[in-house]
Length: 172
Ligand code: NI
Image (spheres, rainbow, N blue to C red):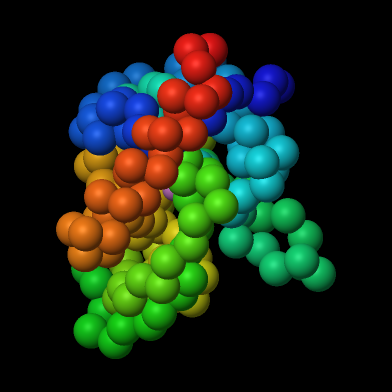
């Protein structure tokens, strides 16, 4: 396994829509393993393939608590089938927007369908932090970011700050 570089705001790739994975082959499974290692190393609880520059519908997550055993999940071509009517607010961060957090209200429960790493179709109900993390990561697959929940004025301020930081760092 290898840690991959995570792309950050304002990289335009983050705004791309990711395409479905057609074949779950060794390359896809290696990418999933590398994404898990990258996520744990960051550290974070979720990562979408686009965040390592790959515009494919692949997400890894681990929402286990600190005193729980690790619970790595690989979601291939995930889809939300249904959203609950109750809402919940979590303070969210994103590995592609370092040192930035924002309160976001999202449905508290959902029904999820995806292919697991063996190509088996899975359907699960999710709640709590897991439901929020799934919605956050699936937004990435549509090129949507947590700054899109801000007012335009505040969003522009955050983007400007990251553009300035990127200029200071210079080209990689
Ligand atoms: Ni994110």
